[in-house]
Length: 474
Image (cartoon, rainbow, N blue to C red; front, side, top):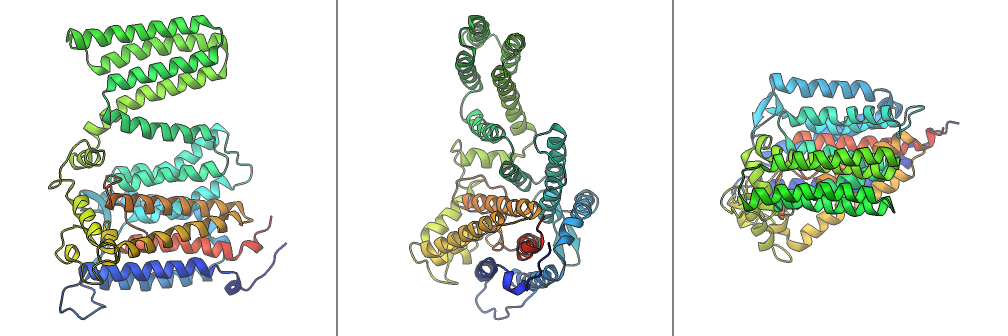
């Protein structure tokens, strides 16, 4: 059944209205962050606020194009467009320009094109096409594999640039999978790894391993019932662990934490695996899997911190966790950002009156740290307004996603929600010191053509799909 509707009567104008407010308010703050007394030309392409106006104009043209296209275009060409962006991410390694330590940009005239920003909406399209394809069952191993390839192929290419911030955003797609029936155990595992990551940095590795052993022992005891052999074998492994721990720390025998980890977990995993096979209980295998993942993850965190992350990235994590205090070094940006936001008080210093802004105390104040400009000049009222606008948009998008009759549209909508929510939380969290500085923009608000155009396309493709939802009955 196909039902034709007047597109103007089915467009979600509420979402468009919020987009207009965010883009307009964002431009005002970009103008303020780059304003110099005496300048009077607004459309000056040598200034960021002039370029942002141009980007806004291009965004409007893209919106018109999106509404002209048939809704089925996005599903039909999802894979080809995904292939093009993967090619672009590879092309960056050959033709890319390095900015701020990352080779993420391709220069086109006086402007820069960042493929990693456009990869997010196109990955969402490809993921929606895959998950909504006929006969696709998310719980099958082949489906897990294909889904992982679609999500993490661009993520790995972006990591190699290297751009850690944009890479981490791709884990937001796991929430889309959860909405579509992904096992909640995977989500719990993800949350556990985050906790384990922080704990590994804050607490001695030996203490972490001992804690995991105790927790696993308790879980085995609850699962095994009267199986005393399981407890005895596990206590034996714990005893070996304690012996190595004592030798290393009391007698300074020189065993490394890696040696202790290897010997201890080899014994425990081997005995647990044998008993799990004999008992044939799925609970044993789940605990065993968690134990193996935890062991390797602890070792990987240590390796990544010392061999993958750059020095300034390591220091940002340490500063965020309170392990180090470096207000004049890697913590300078966040420290100045908090000063700027705090100095705004309840109502702010007034538009174009921010001293921290005018004296450029905060680097990247019109891009990653645009929120501190709002805090200084508009105060608590302005920052609250921005947060309300973003939350209102996200809630509205959730409502739209849930009313979709097409599985493709719903999955794509939740992809948009997941990425948008991640950017919103992490960017504002960076400016107030809750998260490490990983360099991701505030959608529709921060300066940058690639970010504005990509998120505008991301949003309005979904608004277009929603406007034609009645034509997609099946």
